[in-house]
Amino acid sequence: MFGVALLSCYELGRQPQQLASAAAALERAGFSPQLCDVSITKLDEAAVRAAGLVVISVPMHTALRIGLELLPRVRALAPRAHICFQGLYAPLNAELLRAAGADSAVGEHEGWLVELAEALQAGRAVPGLPAAGARPRIDVVPARGGLPALEKYGRLLVAGPAGVERRVAGTLEATRGCLHLCRHCPIPPVWNGRFVAVPLELVLEDARRQVAAGARHFSFSDPDFLNGPGHAVAVARGLHAQHPEVTFDFTAKVEHLLARRGLLPELAALGCVFIVSAVEALSPVVLDVLAKGHVRADVEVALAAVRAAGISLRPTFVPFTPWTTLDDYLELVGWLRDHGLEDEVDPVQLSIRLLLPPGSLLLERAELAPHLRGLDAAGLQHRWVHPDARMDALAETVTAICEDAAAVAGGEEPTLTFARIHAAAAAAAGVAAPAPAVAGVRRRLPPPRLSEAWFCCAEPTARQLRTAAGT
Image 1 (tube, rainbow, N blue to C red):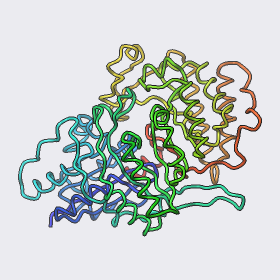
Image 2 (image 1 turned 180 degrees about the horizontal axis):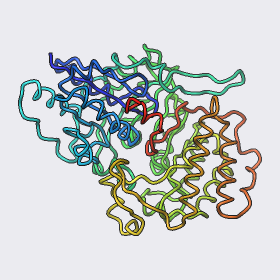
Image 3 (image 1 turned 90 degrees about the vertical axis):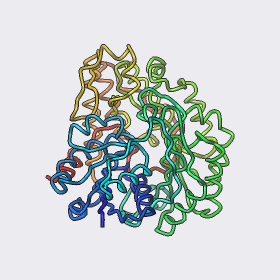
Image 4 (image 1 turned 135 degrees about the horizontal axis):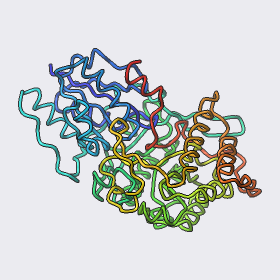
């Protein structure tokens, strides 16, 4: 029997959707893949030794860094196996991964993994990679049986008068890819403005199986749930009709929230409790360079519309870019406080530094050239420095504050962490700390959130890297 080992490194504290999809495609083709999520369990060394094909799933930068640390262990255990990195970040870093010892790198194409496994089993040549921008065929329900149970992953935290309820959370995929071309995002270089919808019946069957396994909340892993609004509503309606007690969250662009604001009340009634939106910045200069497609006023309208529907908005940010000034940073922290968002933005969002992976569309921009300092092959990114040294120093300080807060048992109260970040930014600028929040803006109870902070472009922790390396 030809052995296949599928390894996941990290998927935002969620049960790995990508690995489950690959497992289903391989099982249908007659293989018996062995699944291992090294973010939850130790590396299954026996499965790796027995494998002729080892697939390392890398849907995000953190997973990619951990996978690179894992690579020498896998090669030592299976010296003759074909090692393939698969996922969104694999094609962007294909040259660096091959230089590090990988045999191939492919995007979100589980069908190609089947072709690869069949070729290796038969002793044939490795098949050619899918064409750039090719849409994958998604026609099988993810196979999750070989993964750790859902309760091992992040939970939805719902605060109430009697305490915090911790709901078991699952993951669903309704679409893959994205219509948009935001320059800092890893998706456009791979998908080139395309996306594909997962058939409704597959999404609902995946949901049914996860509910049977204990799920009471779902996070949609789509880069933008509202790329296909008709499909999104059909999925939400189907999910609610079959599981009316289940809640969900999704990610959507500011411009989609504005264009589709009429859908928000229905999505709330169908169970949506929060929406993640990549606001990234308030500065018009930064928003223009990143090609975000919105301005500050749009963010404020979207925030009001989402809240009016009874949904929480959880913006994400990239507050450290070469074009972000210290005044911009101070404006951002003050804006978050004034709009009562300190319970809806994970503090780590104020530490995120612009990531420049190989293939980033920003590398084509003249505005970036003065700040670049070469390729960091080990870090799988291009290095850059800020023209104002205070900003680089502040980034390090805020990162340390967030790490300290995470080390507190149960996690530090977010408002306390934000207060420390506000004070650090004010000290860097030599000004007084931001004014207190506007009275009456904050909710009495914090809105629902996931226990794992949402961010995909931060550096992996030292513990994650040590675990992957086996030290």
